[in-house]
Length: 465
DNA sequence: ATACATGATTTTGA
DNA sequence: TCAAAATCATGTAT
Image 1 (cartoon, rainbow, N blue to C red):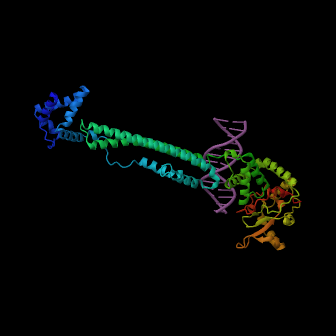
Image 2 (cartoon, helix red, strand yellow; image 1 turned 60 degrees about the vertical axis):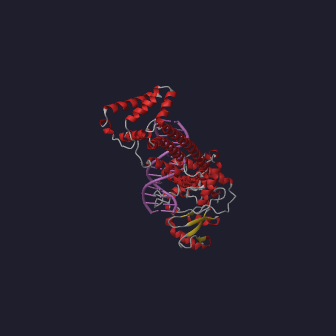
Image 3 (cartoon, rainbow, N blue to C red; image 1 turned 90 degrees about the vertical axis):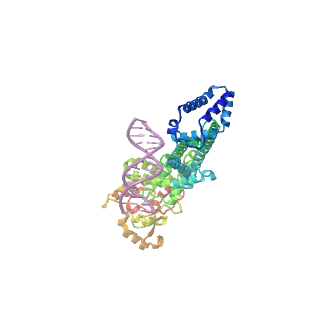
């Protein structure tokens, strides 16, 4: 109590009126040495509080808090603090939002990780679907992707919640602490506010890290699931066999129609290992044929063995189904340059056989035909091309208009020539329909192949004799 | 580790 | 717009 009284006395001795602003540099100069000494005493006593017992300290604290000059003193001290700039070192008030954070936010929003929960990240799925060029064919991958993305989303949200909770807790703790301390030391509300900002800035770096990791995870997921090159898997042996069978049995015109592609895709996906959840799509069939054509053409020699193998296969199958002629339309093809549409019909066999001087075509005659075709290929033009037979087709039209139908009435010159079943499945136009210019044989290169796939296989085709 | 095979994508040309 | 050609990137066999 004595000390308290003394303190009060000395405080009074400083002659603070609480209203007079005190300029910091001048404060000491304008004071007499005695006053300086008193302030020194006060500060010393304040510092000594911690050395005293708790009860004593509390009592003194209470005394100080209740002092009528205390608010004035604290306001002055706060002002001094402000002016010293010590508390300003970390305050860049009204700073713009972190561009990095904004970028991450946008990205997460776009990926459907952040943003509204609705539909479990439906926006991301939409993006994923469109990114892939979407289709039901990728649904398996998509559902997997969806699951993984929602996993990331969940983790992100739970971490974000934890982060926010921790941030809030810590902020309120610090605020309480500072408020509490503001009773015993000069802490202005503004300073508290500033401190909160500092805390939030510190926490935001954690938030950036969290968002960054999430973005990385999404990117990895994306690249794993949506980058087709990454997910490349070789087709199953059976699928390759089916495709090869078709290829070599249509060597003269290895351009399956859309229907044929669908059929092949369907066939292949049956045999392809379904454990992997992989199905072969029409576009994959197209890719396969594109690759096959180019690679075959580039190195026929290399593929000769394979070609023989499939030719033999074809022959065997053909021999088996020799008498079961399929009446369904078969692989005709449209010819790019002349726009000739060739369809298959047994009836036209003889006609075409006459045209091409081919009277016996069967699977077992493959070698014979290969030699023959080579012979034909070695002709004057060095390439086998139906282009040079333009008048033949004209003649054909004249000869038998009954089975030559105009495929495209609008085009006028488009003819539909029913093409011998017997010509399919053999490399008459090969090796193989390839012309000397490196084209598959221009005449046989379709702009679009309109023929439907033949029944069970094209293999019966060699049974025309 | 390497070369080769192969499915997918991109570029090019008609 | 389509197919060829070139290229990429991964799978596989050695």
